[in-house]
Amino acid sequence: MTNKLLLIILDACRPDGLAQAHTPHLDSLWQTGAYTWTARSVMPSVTLPAHMTMFRSVPPEQHGVGEDNVFVPGAAAFPSVLDVAKQAGLHTAMFYSWEQLRDLAAPGSLDMSCCRAARKGEDSDTPVAEAAAAYLVAEQPDLCVLYLGDIDLTGHAAGWMSPAYIAAIEANDRAIGGVLAALAANGLREQYTILALADHGGHDYGHGTNAPEDMTIPWMLNGAGVKRGYALRTPVNLADTAATIAHCLGLPLPAAWAGQPVYDAFE
Image (cartoon, rainbow, N blue to C red; front, side):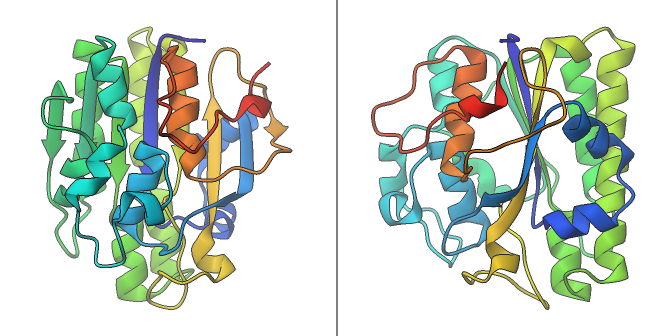
């Protein structure tokens, strides 16, 4: 495994939206990596419970965070992959535009935490991605999280699968392209495994149900030791994300976790 990992989260990006959009940078990740367009979110298919499952590797009925998007202290009983990485002495960082994600790690588990709150009607993700790119080049963290939230905001404002929603996916792709270019220009691209996914989908002007449009998400892994251009044959769910990150970084899987590494992705 490579010794560093970049996790990219595209909030509310549906696989069919990704297919419609012009996304050359994300296309390069799945076309030379392992991927699935049928990974599963959780119920409720809402941002904070989905992220808690993504990072703490247990379903909402265990971590207790629900559709109100409010953190509950009991979730801390299940260690975040950021906590596991920090306890192993790794350098951790998170760049995001939704401040509620501060609870994805225990206090002290992040060497860098950078939140620039999203503003309606603005491109909130490009500045966050630019900050992440600069930090990746300067500090080369072992585990870096980049959360992009504009696709979700656009879905709520203009509707999922609307022209504006597709344009937001394309804007995210350009922002990701800037990060990839910065890594490549500084000889760092091969050091990083990249895992890109969504937390949930959406339909009409919202999400949170068990409808396929809300529950189906893209999930793609790219890096040394990962199969190239490979459509995953095993089911993938959000809880497997933390376990796969831990596997890539050589970290132990906490006994409390429910997810498993997506071994099918690896050579």
